[in-house]
Image 1 (tube, rainbow, N blue to C red):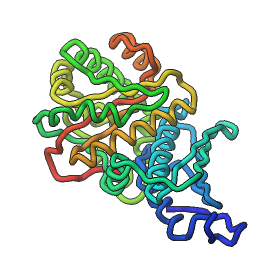
Image 2 (tube, rainbow, N blue to C red):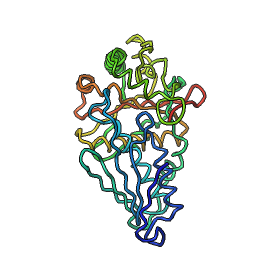
Image 3 (tube, rainbow, N blue to C red):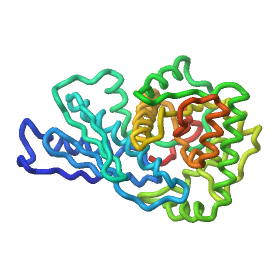
Image 4 (cartoon, rainbow, N blue to C red):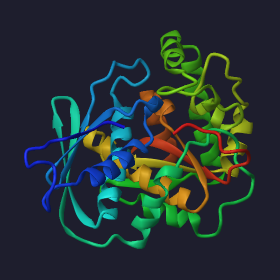
Length: 317
């Protein structure tokens, strides 16, 4: 965890975050999910303000538009806002661009009590993890899908559950196509190998699923891809959510990430597991094709899987 404290006012006093409060904010941001566990942001605190800045990274063959770092940034921003609320302050958020990199300034404006939902999600920060393996075949508890959609709700962001055999087959075909493209892309496979790391930053070897959606979410050259019909069946058995935004700007990617994290933390607070897929949507033909097949008028940014874990909790943050 890296937090920089500006000490213009001595770093203490009623108008500044204390060292202990700064540590709380830093830990919350550290817990956010990020592409390949890279945490592509920097956090600075000064006065009653916390500032997130996207760190420049190496261009990615599989993500030329840089959506994944900004989605990750949005998740970190959501955690930061929850942490500020947990310290008893209302948070005012302003986002912008510094060159090609996104920034967010979050200021504690006045004393305020967090809602029950905010407290519940904040307590789930350290427990959230990525479940990239099979889920238990039991249905989600009644009403859970509506609760998760409510948690996701944000200006410019919408969520849509995949429903019925026709939609499941449409998603299966899109994911199968993307998986085959990436499996045969030597540059992408080289990047993925470089990011695979059993310790520290990177993708852990046990993050690569072998069955159903887990097999097509993060595809290696050795992945055995499931048959389309079997994949469609698995999609129907799981709770799969497509998250969309009204436009496709860097700020929209941040909004999608923040909304994603709220839904993920809500699921975690209810003892559910989840994982996110963005890799397939980096192919423009998959993004546009999926939108057409599902009749979406908004831009697909990511897919989320929710369920009850079927095996020990081994996953990547």
